[in-house]
Image 1: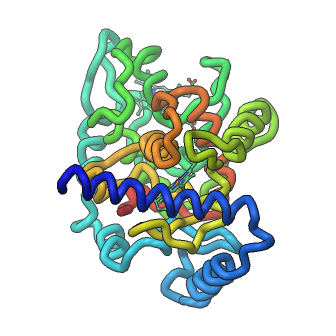
Image 2: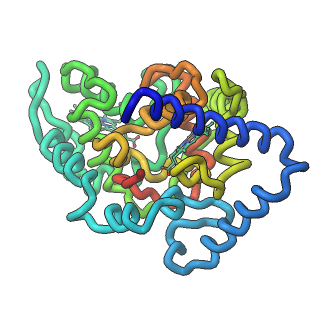
Length: 288
Ligand code: HEC
Ligand code: HEC
């Protein structure tokens, strides 16, 4: 791509985003595009093919994906995320650290011990005194019980373990708790979601609540649910975490992203997971 055409593409996508911002701010005046979007949503809901991916008004990102992308996710032999699961399965059995233990030493068969675990995260973790993503919880077991170093966010072994643990909950409904000790973190995540940010001054909600079903350039805007993550993204040509996706969404509006694994993104993850409560976990998902 030449420099000029790159600039033109950037300008075009900025115009689309600016249009979205206006459409979000003046929703009541804008009847045309929101009417189109609700038609799109109604069509999805009426399609029996998507029954397992829709619960009430909640629609998985799967439904907004192209048929080719959906087919890749549906077939374990085509889904590149299954390679991450395989990495995780060998990590699970690998002895590491000064305590001479593997995950399996304590947790045995993951198919039994990890069933239903990932869909309950993020969760308040008393040992950390704050909210923990499943990645934080895995690293806590490494440092505290295995006496092994924490793994880097989005590193191959951590993505592997996260997806292997997540696979044991595939098809189970997302079910995070947002009351009790999780309540203050949920409130912070919610505030993040509705705060306008970046040069474009756009909040998460403006794209994923007010404009789901509309297209933004080549992308179809989904409701921004988290039940497909960790996921393989064609754009990345690799498997990645939800926090990596958040980073991309912040960059989309020219906002400074937070570090993956930061408190800000973990709190945001709880809010997004709560928005996804009830949807079946699809991890490892495949997305554009
Ligand atoms: C300018 C519009 C825009 C904004 C603002 C935005 N996103 Fe996104 N987001 C996208 C696009 C485009 C995609 C990819 C297509 C899709 O799933 O909507 C996406 C995807 C996602 C997904 C993955 C959905 C799936 O099933 O694959 C999540 C989760 C998400 N966004 C969360 C957020 C959060 C949280 C924020 C606020 C920090 C945010 N987004 C802000 C445009 C946006
Ligand atoms: C020495 C034993 C031990 C080892 C080794 C160990 N864990 Fe744990 N793990 C525990 C205990 C005990 C808990 C329950 C929480 C606690 O008391 O800290 C736990 C909790 C968890 C949880 C949260 C379960 C839930 O229901 O919320 C996950 C996920 C987990 N471990 C994954 C792993 C992974 C992945 C590994 C390997 C990298 C690992 N653990 C290694 C002992 C261990």
